[in-house]
Length: 445
Image: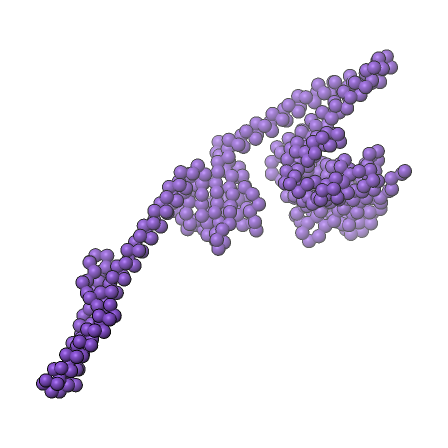
């Protein structure tokens, strides 16, 4: 292409020289033919510019030389662009069709929580309208305090279930997934059926536990009478003892089931009654020291006079289950250390033991109902498998959480964490009184 252009320019100059030699005035011929050649190039440039301005409507001009090559390059680039554009549009349509076919809602939010796009199920579940709500902040459209708190949190821990404001409406599970430069992909699912099944399960467990409590009380009473009756055949002493043990274990399980059902059915947050945690922990410490099967060392450190605003019953239940769990799985030669302290972030109660520890793969599931790390050992210890589930629900009612660190074979540390709004600030002079009440006593030989 460039060789042809140079040859054409050389031909024009050669013709100008030839005419100048024949007719004279060489420079005039050179100037004239150069101007004609430049005018020709300007005409081609004008045709190219006009075609570029009206390119979608007109065909490319038929030009040779360099300008023809430029036109050919533009045509190839245009075809390639159209091909990629059609491919992107096809993928976009396929993505929209696939997301529209999903039973779950999908919403794309900007870093400012503005709606960029959503599929039809999301519009149906959340009542969004495509022509009106695109570009609006989603927290202005969904005015649910739990949702707003979840949306503006530092991290998205897990799905949030929104309760329906009116009876008959659906429960929604919302999961936010951050991606890109601060953008959020939000998944919305209708979990009404699952919530109804969960409610039925809770009602069944609560009702069954209530119904079993009365016959178990009767059976336990008769067994106690038989155990104390001197006229009973001595051969029945062993079976009666075993039946009493199993009845007591069933009574314990039913009591834990009722307690867990009560916690699960509690709506909203726990009450805000002042709770003297120092006195509570001192009493739990004395009870632990009175146990015949306790470890060699059971210590209590009260480092703060602060108490808690909450339900004394639920807090005592959580602390007791954490402590009993440590006492059960710590050998007689081991130690259990209870600690209570507070700081600028909240208040904390921890129980550290030197027991058998928990394998790492079991840690995410230890607060599930009836979950046992070692089923055989748990049954030997008489545990119900509900203690840590009770702890989790009791802490959640107080806005807290349970943190567990454990090393298999070396021991575990369970920490109950309470937010600052639940801390009851008390005079520092109460620390000395609480510490004096909880002075550790060594186990007698």
